[in-house]
Amino acid sequence: MVTVVIPTFNRAALLPRAVDSVLAQTYQAFELIVVDDHSGDETPEALAQWQGDGRVSVIRHAENRGVSAARNTGLAAGRGELAAFLDSDDEWLPSKLEAQAEYFAAHPEAMLVQTQERWMRKGRRVNPGQKHLKKAGDIFIDSVSLCLISPSAVMLRRRLLDEVGNFDETLRAAEDYDLWLRVLARYPAGLIDRELVIRHGGRDDQLSAQPGLDKYRVMALEKILREPLTPARRQAAEAELQRRRGIYEAGRLKRAGVVTE
Image (cartoon, rainbow, N blue to C red; front, side):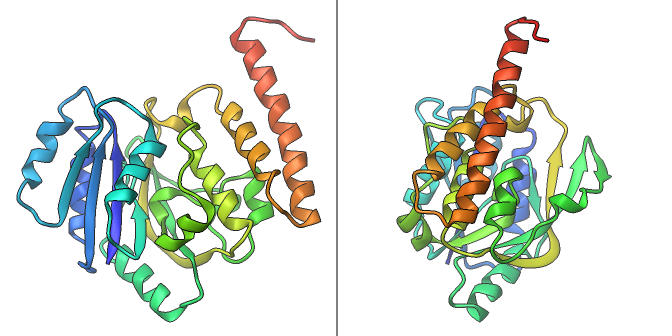
């Protein structure tokens, strides 16, 4: 059983595409939990079309609590031994769950596996740079400077979160960066080297488009440095923390209208 969690907030127009891509999976041993983070648009009406579909459960937050809380709510309600996440503006290709379930069956020691992604920006396909391609193995150091795991592409064993903790609800952004650093400090990443996720970008409502994101990356790096790390990993995290602090401070001053030389 795979617990699939879709967190959503004010994306009534996009959410059906995401839900339909889950329901169309060739691997049907899943439960889909959609967590509406107190949307103010027509999201409840959009979700009503799946009422009565036993594969779909809907949970609505009484107040807006952020994407971390929404994912954690879905995880808490789920029963699967495996968990997968799908952002409400993304979609899966039909064999995504099947490929990952087969990977775990073939690799009982694996704790996390992801796939490559197809990137779309404002309806047009774009080619990610080589540095953005997903990797396998010990990718902690590479992931310190550039988040190399994305929620929509990953599947993990639920017991992994019992060990490292869930999404940090104090982080309004970079919450996935924080979690993946905690995971990668302990375990290698598995990879299915095929594009099985369509990732849509280029909209102003995405967290990645919001100003001040480096504040949360700084918080995540400060957290991981409190964990036991190898000397090489610690050095990489400390260097990136110093760099991110500089970026955040420069951005803060710019937003405040302070001119610096």
